[in-house]
Image (tube, rainbow, N blue to C red):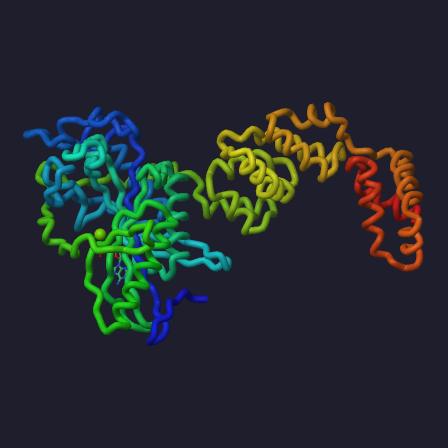
Length: 482
Ligand code: ADP
Ligand code: MG
């Protein structure tokens, strides 16, 4: 099912390419030793290099280079052993040097791919054009004073990876799936925290529309969108705007636009500067970046297991559906938690309990998995208590709720509340007798052929036993007495 938008002249296809700025996880900046911690007092993490004092020279941070290479490897991309830093010249108050050091013609990482999955289960490979390293700019603060703007240079010089996709995306859903998958991969790699609220991942969204089979038309770039939901909304709003223009006999001008979530529309920011406006040239303060192939290979050897591989392995080793495995690998902490629960136990049961009652419990109590009141060991113990028939599944749900609320041990909860499963056939038979005696009319109906009532009797017996009867034994006893 392809995504199209209808206009008066028929249906339109939407074409999207994303440029993602991902802040590199590193102790210090790309070309200086200043710290990168988020939320520090303004202008407390600024070196002379970041403030562009005369005569200060940039020195490349090897840790940031390693992060970019790791990311490239994680995207199955080509690593360019020789790359170069260029100056991108523009004038803005938050850019003290008057240029950003970036990589233009020779990025550190070339073509790669990201595989996305759509809600109908289909997968699609999206091309990554390139990844380059560049510095972030400072931040203008316009809301501190009625007549002045302030500048905070803490962010100036922080390393960013710009990850550019091919124009392979065809719907808001695909754009969202791409960003989620990219974020997951970056988090697994530990190269970017993917936190869009804090601005450590932001997307420029390029959108054009066309009739099916046509070459690409002119695109507009919606700048700096800071949530996946807004990216999806921006795609739709911008595509509709362009369609309306074409349907009116107009043309789309290439320009940079902004998305306004409160109005659900994009508006023009500036007409697109051509690249030569930036007067790119190689930064004379920096040598070309030459990587040693053995070093790249050593980084490759140390890569963690990435989501696609982990998903395949979990599905295979624990016998769980591919879909469930996808849910469990969305975050590494979830996958680790799952494996701790599933190891040596019934993997399917572990997955069902995690994806079902455990996630619901986290939601209900407002916890993330990192601060879950129920540890993997405790959840595992609960499964063991079901497996050895200490409790049945229904009681286990109750116990898990208490565990979520109190953090108590499951065995302690079961003992304190007398929830142990009843396997004593004498007690079960007695409960069945009570139920049959209390429902003579239903009993007559059943014996007259209304076999559906079997479930009713089982339910009543369980009720009499406060839910603690062993389900198999209760079924057997009811069948016998009926
Ligand atoms: P620039 O440097 O001007 O931003 P790029 O060639 O780097 O231009 O492309 C930027 C982004 O625009 C890429 O993600 C690319 O996939 C996307 N893009 C290119 N052409 C189109 C198009 N016709 N429609 C939508 N996106 C496009
Ligand atoms: Mg661009």
